[in-house]
Length: 113
Image: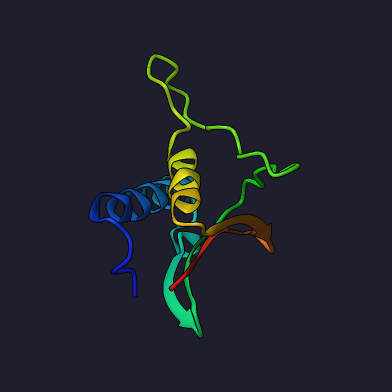
């Protein structure tokens, strides 16, 4: 379904989104709530990449701005994962959407196939 995406872009999409989800759930004390759901589906001419993770911290999503990095280590730059995904979406004329609902953070990228 994702044949039209360059291999490096696909690795960046998967790697950054999974890294973010893993980092987020690793902060949850209860192991039963460390949940990640990744789906790639096709509906007509759309390929939908969706990754969700349970969250107890409610990231602020305002005016289409990307959420701030939550990493404590300020000696290295952070916060490029979602920017990279956003650039990949633009490169392929796809749409990227972030949402938080009922303690689930969701990243959706919709590609036209």
